[in-house]
Image 1 (tube, rainbow, N blue to C red):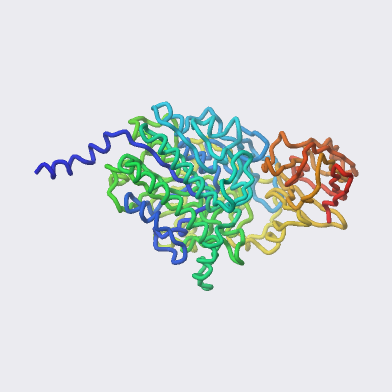
Image 2: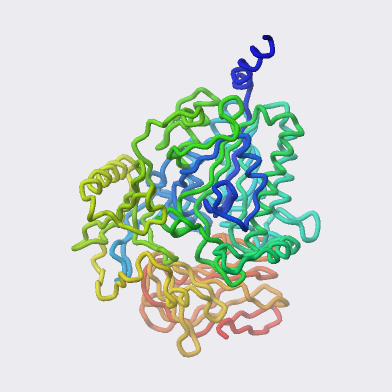
Length: 622
């Protein structure tokens, strides 16, 4: 009898203890990249299965955005990207923009002008780390951030420690050492970054074992660059099925290292006796990458879902999600409730601190974690951009309600009206059949929810493009893989890589940069290795654009492009030839970036020469 009473009271006794939080966020890990849903035979994730056996797996979990920084901001604040204005992953760029603004122009191929996005997570927002720190928790951030460098780093957003304190979009240099972080070095040759980060996070948890802690373990995996332990690549190369859409041995090795890191954290919690009083959340910031290339194929496939990272189809926003919550969740359970990134903020506050969220667009998931239905009307994703990736769509916003999903394509219809895609995800998870013309009443109902959402969040929305030329728009390519021309435009030219808002081509002995937005740039890392500085850079160019022009430089010790490592170019932008020389006061260079303007237009480069301290001249337009 006593044993039965203790078993009955155990959940209540556990919930009364101070609970720790471990929030594990994968980077670019798709819904079909784990063994949680029976969608892969190639990838191996036994530790995620081990976590799922302790908690609840959500089969319909969604990221706030199909790209990373917007989702990261939503997790930390509970706020939709539509509200914060962080709608693209550009928080590593030097420009500090704290308020979204309507866009000014777009190319003739685009129906709408996308807004100018925010580039930093403002410190005025309350974050999970700040709330838990104020409640007496130790707070630590380990891994990727991508929401801004100081004074917008984790240290200014409530975390006591931040490692490796890197503001970039991915690992500095590589996953396998040597790395290129400014102040974080490998301990041994060939050390894997995810192994090291998991070890550092485990050591920190051991230091905090006698107090409550909130750990952000935000993995660099499985974001580019695509490299992994050679032994794991060889292991998975022997397992490749050429007929399987998931067949990159390098990516499979990266998934395994991601899973190994999760196992390290679970082992540490078990060893320290903390597993029964630690809430663990695992999810991803967006869908799997379908547009880069590795091992002669795309990194992954999100089948049976359509699309991937940077698209508004299911493959871009449906993500794996497991929550282990001792005393609350039935171990090994599953839920088909709709959940999204914004929900974690109010859930953790309500469940652990008995606090209501001071802000937010999500709801508490506590009922779902108890096995009950959620009282929610719908969830939304806001992505007012249209990168030319496979299964791309014009700037859009979506709503999920029950089994129906509606995507509004801003101003992509007749005479600038919105156009809509409606899918029945229960019968058509691959989103092949648009029901918009079949169910017009349903479209109107769901679009009214979208309109209310946009007003409620104060979203800065795309506006019609007055320069749109229907003759230049190619509707047959919409929603399909990027054309060969688009892939060619994105490929390096003469060693230079263009940004998403720049198109690059050779012309004579020079380069032509065609800017399509407010942030065009080109970069190069193939620089002379033995050259010593200080350096001078000589440029000859003519510009038919406008705005500030700068040259950024990175060094082996400081790999990112930061404004303090840049020089301004005083360009007249009058279409006439100009010659400019800038000084680069460093001993070594690892990369260069040229930002020719801050507006659409054309810039022609006819000469770009790097002169080292010995007077040797290195032509950067080979």
